[in-house]
Length: 359
Image (tube, rainbow, N blue to C red; front, side, top):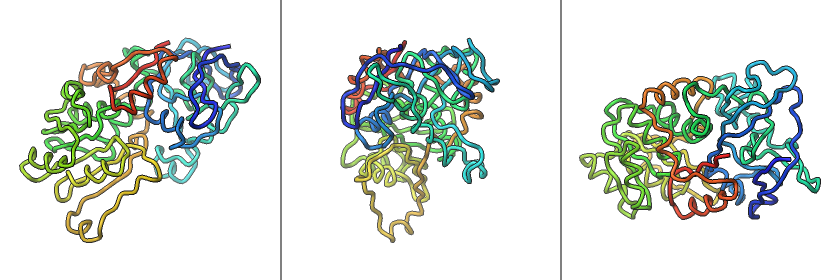
């Protein structure tokens, strides 16, 4: 028996309870978690914005130590530190054949599997494949990547989602060039990672935007050169900070229609907007045909930072070891499993950066 955070049904409170976790079968790995980040996507799963089979063990951003491996697993062994990869690519679907592994058509098929059982015998599913809100988990072998050397496992947990997403939004989706100006909307865990990635990319002016004035110090520590408290004049405020032109790149990390529209309006003519935030179906964004033509801007979605974790983690690790990327700066709260509901409440209230469950 191990302890885990279980979502019994969509819209229900999480239950911190014991679960029965099986030993790894062929092609599986058992991992003892060191830490797991609490991501907004976990909140979206709990409230039904994103759908997965329930009841489920949530949590998709984590790192830990391999306890045991099943038959056929050779790339990791007991005792190895690993980062969980919640969206493994199958390597054979059409997007994978194009090299777009972040769009793998089969990445989330594992979420329908039976992962464990409750004490009273109910089947549990693994949330977004990896069920990181638990002391231990059993995952498919392609859901684990070797943890970078020299990076503490508690910090490495953040590499599994927030950092890859923020890094990729800047370096893969928006492709920020040295000297360009960037605005980042939303200063949560992903937003803080995005700010650091923009600084490393050599952006000149980096504008952080959030509804909370209290996040300014966090944003500036991550690399923001300017801070704007979101209002009805946000786009105008950003243009004033960029010589009346608007930024070259806007990265939206919130997932709300009004924020996406404002991010787009904050860019210069020919500017680029990357949407990282996951919004609900009710969030409708509208444009008229003339403005699309006149402004020549681009608006792009961004899944998992358009990243290939196996290739990107070593690159990011070099920046971490060199002191250019500070994983600890993303974390504003270290909690236990019992603290996850409170972390959800803080996200809804727009408070803090990343909450990290430390086991």
